Amino acid sequence: MLCFPLARTIHNAHNVSLEGPSLPDQNMPLRGCAPTVESIRAARQALEQLGISPHDMRALDVLVPSEGDKRNSDSLRCHVWRLDLPARSLIKLDSGVYLAGIELCAFQAARTMDEYELIECYFELCSFYSMPEDPAEDYRELKEPRTTVRKLKDCFLSLPDACRGRSKALRALRSVRDGSRSPMETGMTMAITVRVGLGGIQVRGLSMNYRVAIDEEARGLTRRKEIIFDAYIKRGMQDVEYQGARHNEELQSAIDNERRHVLQKMGYKIVEINKQQLFDREAFQRVMRTISENAGIRTGNRPDDFEERQERLRQFIIRRWRQR
Image (cartoon, rainbow, N blue to C red; front, side, top):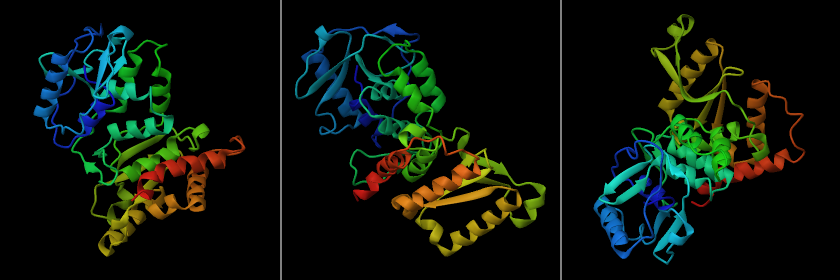
């Protein structure tokens, strides 16, 4: 069975179409034995038929049931899995060749990724975009998210309480929201939802791509019937918007002004965040302070080194754009 991290590469490939996980019907032990020359050849042939490049499958990641079944080499990495496989966590690629589904792949990530990476990874899996393996390439928009927070949580909870990575995965998932439309929206939202210990302001009541119907009093100000928020924070009725480069265009600026007037009429507070604020430490701190104050969040009980933790989080959020 092919697993993380190769499985993540396969799920992210833009030219690969996979059906949803369908096996097994119920939780069951991982069966099989040590990989053989024949099984490795069959796996490579199945990946080649999917359109996976030789470079991306230069090393296969495979789940095996015991240490005695491991056969590691430059082209093979074996990972021991002693637990039952969750129901509907596998995708059949070919006879005898299986791929870890998104949710199982996400759980495996908790065993190797740090918490920042894990939260970002889960955001991306529940988003309308996909990040390329090559950091020089831009993200790709998706028609539908590959999974949801609910599906990830159900998968994680189906595993034994004491299994390695379960607590970490569930803790990371508390910071994640469905429906991000871009990496910068993800970064903006991470700064708000991540726990204080990691430098976030730990807002729980936040929804992404939140739809609000225009009320009667504001209908005369717009032709719209509803407005979609990048992120809605219930505490303080806050609309938090990431302002990309297109918002500087004249037509979009006029649309934004109308939108702003409508929401103010309806009693919402609007907080706008742009790339420059994410890249400037003091500006970033100010906007996070504004959101906290709007939400009535007390800041006096934060750790003495909270600003340093917040800066580590900010540096993590912007690292991909610093590399370009």
